[in-house]
Length: 463
Image 1 (cartoon, one colour):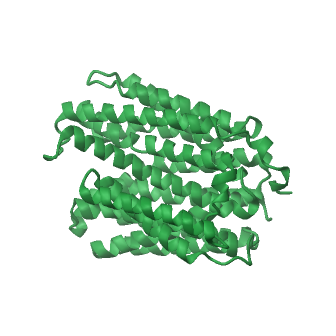
Image 2 (image 1 turned 120 degrees about the vertical axis):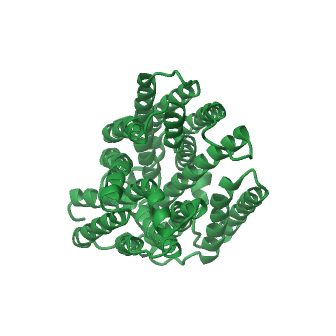
Image 3 (image 1 turned 135 degrees about the horizontal axis):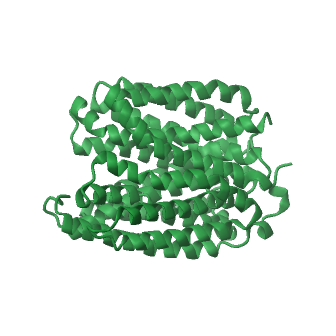
């Protein structure tokens, strides 16, 4: 393996790339809608198309990476992501933009499925928490900088400049990856690819992700139920497959892997909509300007960026489940406190809770990632990375779906206007209460995952 620091730089930069684009584009959506004559539904697909494609392709690409080589798929992902970004920048219609976002999602899935696997296989277990913490910090940094840089670029150069910037970053990463990443080490070169499982899995997951935000409407319920039935059928296919897309034995015998992924899913389900909810509260209830609200909300990701590497390093010395569980417990406190918001709530209290939540997220995310990646054999790094990524994306979707469902139920079917601050505040408080309860469940999964170091044989470590 060529220089470990080069691998850390490449994987960390690529991990910065995809969430940065997502958070930056959200700021530019109004301008995109005006220039391309897109309505609210179409603008929603600018974000959803990426999420759907990334979630559907993550697990198949993780399997392909283990089978055919991670470097190759990582490089292809950077190339496709860059081309799709350039296509988005020159998009002349809403259809072209949405198609390019689908391609962005496919390229992003290639990057997601391989970056953590490459990084994990490059460092011994004693150093993984630290480097995975740095990787997680890059994600939080991108989420912090995305709205600020995206807003500035949109205002000065237009929304196309965001895609041009991500294209430029892809061009910079590509030659560095080609030169510094070692040749592919195919972990399962003789295995076949589970096409039937991949198709059933992709359609089922797409139905759930697309259907959940449509609930409690009849189409939303039918899509979610169809997706869940499809996933049940998927497990039957995988049990009989000679080379399954997802080895079900990982979920039967490896409790560290199972509970760590469940904990991640619950954490993202309970926290991703935090910024959305507080943005509404700060602007509609407390009457702060968008710029002021954005500055206040930075308190959380800044804490996450600073503390994630430290939390990861701590999980190299202390059982990851202990550190991660402490983080989840702190998150419960922060979310529960926000369920008591009122129009008179002080700004100091809100910033303090954001910082507390930033601490909780940092303590959870890096050690939990360390636990997932260190709980499997090297031949399974790609699938493990992809599974964790899928938990993240589906959790984020569920978080927004739960939020929109609660707001719809509280505010009624007629318009759901955010100018009705009384009903809006009731919905926000109820949502935070539900999220806090979810994190209580997540805390249980986190502490019950078992001891990583005593359960995983030393031979899974690299030499």
